[in-house]
Amino acid sequence: MSAAGLEVGAKPVTDRAPKRRRYGLREYALIAVGVLAVIAVLRVVTGADDIASSGALAAAIGLAVPIGLAGLGGLWSERAGVVNIGLEGMMILGTWGAGFFGYHMGPWMGVVGAILMGALGGLIHAVATVTFGVDHIVSGVAINIVGLGVAKYLAARFFSGLPGGGPTQSPPIKDLPAFTLPGVSDGLGTVERKNWFFVSDVAAVLRALCTNLSILTIIAVLLFVGTWWVLWRTPFGLRLRSVGESPVAAESLGVHVLRYKFLAVLVSGGLAGLGGGFLALVAANIYRDGQTGGRGYIGLAAMIFGNWRPGGLLSGAALFGYTDAVQLRGGATVHAFLLLFAVILVAVGVWQIVRNRRLVQGILALVVGVLVAWWYFAADAVPAELTGTTPYVTTLLVLAFASQRLRMPAADGQIYRKGEGA
Image (cartoon, rainbow, N blue to C red):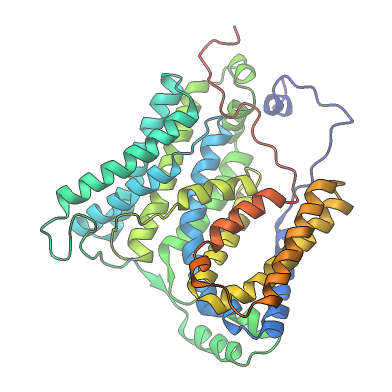
């Protein structure tokens, strides 16, 4: 069987099979420029300069990284055919690991501790699902519950009595290295403050990327690139993805299916734990109870939004991180964001109707977009009680009206026993 046949399993590929367009760097760059242009227009129209400020964008980067790492962990697991909704629990274990090892051994050991604790959660999930054949959803829910309880117990056991520590938080952790380009950052700040259309917005984006950028953020970007290269450009990645598409066909060609599944879930847990470690080491410099705030679930949503591919996942994480940052800036900024959201929904609705011929989804997107636009023009501000729901509402609406055609790995979530195809 050829490599192409290995990926699609026993399903024959015919000339009538729909061709799905793959986006490359040029397409993603054009999309980014278009989004930035829309935000620049809305900044001028609404007068909300903070919607595209370097401070808001820097906060968006910091909030997108843990979501992206959790989603990347989910991508590794589900590409091997194992559903991992236990990402939240693995992230929670990672926050504790970062707090404990980071305080006692330094921030870099905190990174290692976060990965190890997340991988421990992945190990439990792998043993349950791959070895014993437990339903993937049941195991993932159990991981989330157990991870929360274990982190609470360990925090009370090891942080109580330490200076600045307690049953719900660790002592402060030393900072990881961060990078700033002094001359470049200051010059871009000057251009940003001019409020020139689009030019100042580009300067704000560049300033956010070169001002106080954590080394862990750079590592996260490299992990995205590395994941793409390993899974889509190496024989190892082809075998791992074949396990998620058709484990029977993969095993018939000599691929050790259970081994690849086990390894993928371990990597998944380590990446999710690193996402939790980012929250403790970079975002707060301290472990706190409830620190993840559901970001493991949002990471799972970002992975689905990204169609189980690193590029799309990165876009989804950036979107959800940006909405999270917007709600932190206050009700006035969220009010301006309503108009942006209305424009996106209307565009999605038109795309669904004209390009994809999906009338129901298109009409629903148009209706919701019009309602959001009406809310923007009818109200002067968004109530403080609703601003905190912005990232979660965005998650639901984006998944409901996403214009791309989603296709999960064919054998994702299926229980597999060795020799099943014999």
